[in-house]
Each structure stands twice: as C-alpha cells, then as structure tokens.
Image (tube, rainbow, N blue to C red; front, top):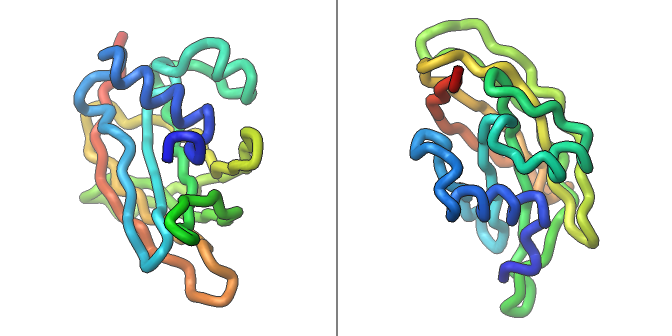
Length: 153
C-alpha cells in the first residue's frame, strides 16, 4: 500500500522512476519475516531532491550516501508502519574494518524510517550488516546486503 510508505521513500522511488539514479543505486529492497516487511534502500545523497534533503537536514554530496530502513506489519490485510529501532555497520566486503552506522528516526505523518548517512567508497562493494528490532518480544532481525556505489565527479 503506497500510503504506508513514507514520503521520503516515495521521493527516492520517484527519483528511480525518473531515471535519476544509476542502476547501481538499486531500487528499494525488503525482507519478509512473518507478517513483517523490512524495507531498506541506500542511495547517494547527491541524488536526493534538494527539498527532501533540506527538510530532513541531510547534506547532499556525491561522496555520501543514505541508508533508509522502515518496517511494515501486515494486520488484517493492510500494511501498517512499525516503530523499529535499527543498528548496524558498513564496510568493505573483503576487509575487516567496519564503521558503525548512526541511525536517527525520521517521521512522516504516522510512518517512521530510520536513516543513517555514511561515506561512499568509490566503486567498491560495501557490506551492510543490520539488526532491526521489528518486535520487542523477538530477537532483532539480521539484514545483510552488499551494494556498490560510484562517485560522480
């Protein structure tokens, strides 16, 4: 249900649809865990519309990227947003060095996303390891993915 996806994520999706992001920017992805969907997307902050970046205090830069995570729960056939704290790290696939991601909550109406800004390593696959606390009565979900970014100069 589109109305459950925060405006911020819709702006990212709109940028994808308009062809403003390269294919390496990858579309929004999600993992299904029972009745929960954990959505995540990472994109260079340089591709964010200026009004979206300004409204959320995000610096636009081709050398920085933004990771956006949100959780939806299916209840009675409808998707509803869930307040889900996120923690995690990012690093090179082959390296042992991991950088903690500093997540903060962004609210848009009744929805909430967790976002973190990080430095891009040009043309290197980056491994994301996240823990998403989608249900306080369960262990956090582990979400791992790899994405490659390119710095447009």
